Length: 199
Ligand SMILES: Cc1cc2nc3c(=O)[nH]c(=O)nc-3n(C[C@H](O)[C@H](O)[C@H](O)COP(=O)(O)O)c2cc1C
Image (cartoon, rainbow, N blue to C red; front, side):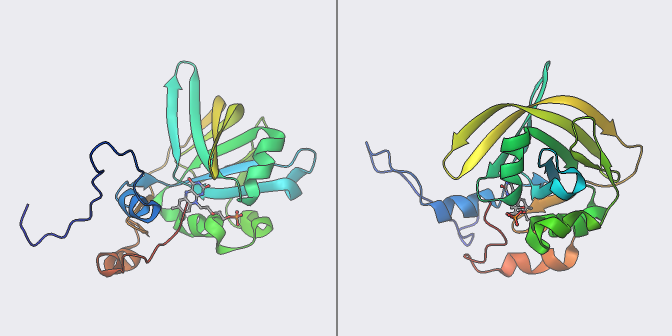
C-alpha cells in the first residue's frame, strides 16, 4: 500500500477488550456494500391502512433447508411494531430502477404515504409485495432476538415470487446508491462525519 494512502485504525491495547468507537465502526461498515430491500409488514386486522415498510440492507439468507432469512430492524422504526405484532414480513429485493422507492421507504415520506408509489400485491400472509422487485419473499417470524438498539427477526419463508425481468440490483455503498452516479461522485470527497444514514 502506498504510504500516501490514509488509514483509520483502532488497535486494542495488550490485554484489554475495549470495543472500537461506534463512529469508527459506522465508517468501516460504509465499506460493506449492501443489497437494498424493502421490508414490509401489516398491522393485524387493518387491511391496506395498516401497511408499513422500510428500506433495509441488513438482510441475509440463513439456511436453505429449511428456507430461513433474517432481517435486523431498529426498534425505533415505524414498521418494527407491525412486525412484532403480526409476525408477518415481506422482503422485496430492489432493482436499480427502484431507487425512488428506496428513498421513499428510507424516510423520504411519511410511513402512511410510502405505498402510494409502486404496484403492491398482497401475499398469502398479508405482507405487501412489490410487483417490480427482483424477487419477493413472503415470511413469518419464527425467532426474535434482541440486540441493543435493533431486533433480529429470523423468518420462515412461506412463498416467493421471482420475476422474469432484467435489472441490476440496487446496491448501497459508502453512503450512496451505486447506480446513482451523481450521488456517488461526491462520496470520495465527503467529510468523515457526513453520514448518509445511521441504520
Ligand atoms: C440504504 C439503507 C439501508 C438501511 N438499512 C436498514 C436496516 O437494515 N435496518 C433498519 O432498521 N433500518 C435501515 N435503514 C433505515 C430505515 O430505512 C429508516 O430508518 C426508516 O425507513 C425510517 O424510519 P420510519 O419508517 O420510522 O420513518 C436503512 C436506510 C437506508 C437508506
